[in-house]
Length: 305
Image (cartoon, rainbow, N blue to C red; front, side):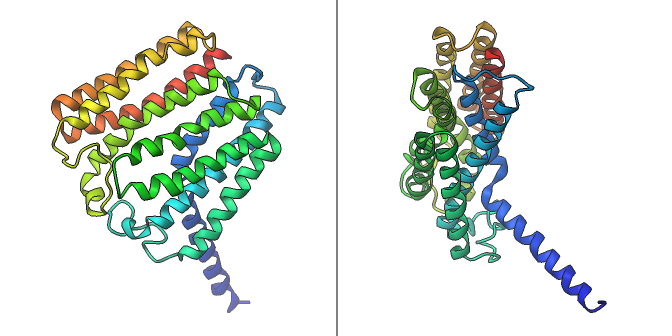
């Protein structure tokens, strides 16, 4: 028994280490925010009436969240498989499982297939085939269109914004088994939000990205103010767009004004980024984007409830 204890301890350490590696492939922090928007899309659907003590709705939310996390995790895993050589060249990603040599790409492919396909099937079976198919389409676009394009042309940001904006629409489709104006509005809000978000991150991490040959900024030079202008234009769109959900009766006045004020904050940060064009102002846009999305999503659903 005494001789077996170190072996058991070793297996325990290996199991914990492997679980951490799989967790890194899933990117739960990023995936959680993405899937949260799909839950909001579901709750915003006109045929869903949320009550805190309604166990049936909670069951649906949990299944939607689980399926979404699996699909998003599969997409994130494929992203890391295809970018494993680039990740090895960047400080913030070199300790991921594959660049660090802790996991082979074949094992990661198996994990990606299991998570991605099972998540899409879960959504398709429990909700409707349209929701499952749309979730799998988002995986394909993110993994096989956005990821390789990042090394070719800055249009990758536009391509990546499509699967990035699909989650709230997927949630809407899961609830209604169809497309409608409300779902598309949620898609558009999340679509335009992503551009300043991506560009601010790319500006802050420019040296890392440039070293790996990844092109995310709308220009080759970091110092130009063109990125700031683009951030201003895309964030400005979000201000009038915040009024559209109210115009079609999706939300009331409170939700609309919260969304408008958040859009103004995002636009203001982008203006400062254009004027100053420095590390601090780029980070301000980045953190504004982190505040903007969860705030407007919560405002929309709370105002509906």
